[in-house]
Image (cartoon, rainbow over all chains, first blue to last red; front, side):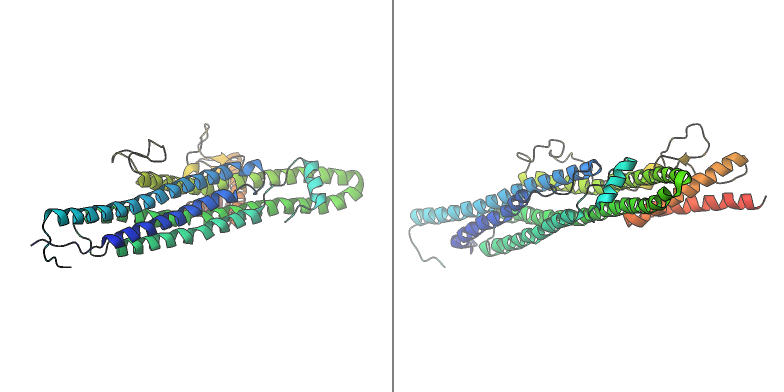
Amino acid sequence: MYGRFEADPDSLAAGSGQMGRHAEQFQAVPRHLEQLGLGGSWGSDGLMAPFIAAFAKCLQTGARTLFAQAAALDATGGGLADTAATMRNADADAGRVVPARESAT
Amino acid sequence: MDTPPFIGELAQLIGVDVLDVHSDNVAADAGAVSAAVPGLASVADGADSTMDRATDGYEGESATALADNWQGVGGDLRQTAATMNVLPPVMNGFASVASAARVAEITQLVSLASVMKVALGAGAIGAGVAASRMAVTRAAVQRIKHTFERGVATRLTPAVDRITLRLEELGEKAAGPRGGLGNPALAGAGGRVSPYAGRLPETAAGAERGGTRMGMRWGKKDETGKFHGDLPRTTNDMTEKEKRRIQKDLEDSIKAREEEEAWLGYSDAGHRRRMEDERKALGMIKEDFNEQ
């Protein structure tokens, strides 16, 4: 027999909203780190320059990666919303095509 | 430790700069990175729960696709947090070796100051002592700088670079084959070689072994004070002069390595092994002299 989705499009939609908030929280971290200007106050001795440069590059790369991952979180949230919408449309279509009958809830 | 003004002047007199580093700021910045990491991990955990709740009971092909995609995303968030967490200890390591170098330099200058005080009161002989002591101090400060630079270049900077590379890899994964951080060398379908696949050459000792021979059968001391190249295994085919030179070079090298170990604060296996080898070679040469 047909299995029936027990997943609730409403909870998917709620999850989507929540995931968007997670994405925002996540990207706040690299944004904050960028503002701090880390590495800028360590001193100007030439002997330190290579390490400071390596550190700056590391932070930059980390920030870009974190932003990319925040975007992925956002995209996942989008996926949840799309899935919810699809399920609702499918239900609506099914309701139209098949005359209303007793459907187990 | 702020530079006392008379130390700054003395440094100028002998023609060196005291290492300009603010270790407190380095440590503070390390703390800032450290503090940022838990926030990442907690979002990752929260997102996991959100996914669980949202997809509860959801089955089927698209459910599987969603779950698989999520596993990649969620795992990578945690990995990134863990990778970033490796950075603060390296920063603190840098702060402490920089601070140690600075203290060592200032100590040299303080010691010079007290010699100068006595010597300059002692007329012509004193002037000679002062001049010679100034030269010794200058050489010592240069050596401290060399040791610092080498220590950072061989251990600390590469550690940071490894973290950077790992972060780049994670970034490429996040954006997928179409996007990415713009580094085509890292992206690409499956043909990418992970820099972590092979063992990275790490120890300074390993790098040192490639010293030039310059026509000699054994190594010699370089400008950082350390012995490079092959250590002698037997004294049979050495002239007296060669033995003496090598003995002196080894003694200096061992002292330089001990100093490096003492204020760099750590010594990896390769470094320790090398020091051990040098001590043995020195012992052999000394024994040889004693037997005559």
